[in-house]
Picture 1 (cartoon, helix red, strand yellow):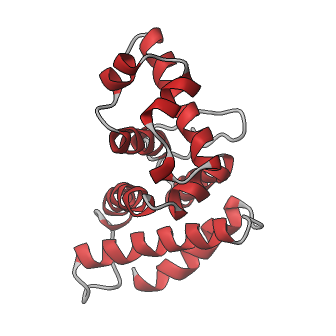
Picture 2 (cartoon, helix red, strand yellow):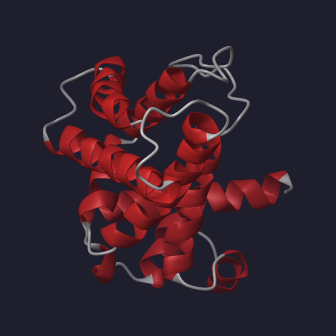
Length: 187
């Protein structure tokens, strides 16, 4: 993706995020997004066929970075050396959620929250399958792996919703500890 393309997407994502903070998802129009992003209608539709596609791609971009197998050092945190450590991966995810607190709270609670949660859950399922359940010895062999994956992912999504709803008072490290304490007995 060239720099102009990246700059346009960033402007659209930023405009959409700002609008989500102020308005409900259903009230936001494509016209408001393009006005705030200062891009043309044709440009918007060249990047995103619909507003739902914009939401999906915004989620995917966030999740692809957060769930990356090779994280990079960032201004607010550095998890680049902890690529294989599941606790560090969870903490890294939580740092990003905290950095985008307003947008995440809106995405989790707006009428398209189910769509966001579905994407989030789907990405987390992959993480659980790849990093927790693959290759390791499971204590819990009674529960089918796909059901266990769903349970662990749902637990994390609910934990994140609780954390956001309660003002994110705990650090990402504390929330990662809570998650480990809740899931260790079922794995």
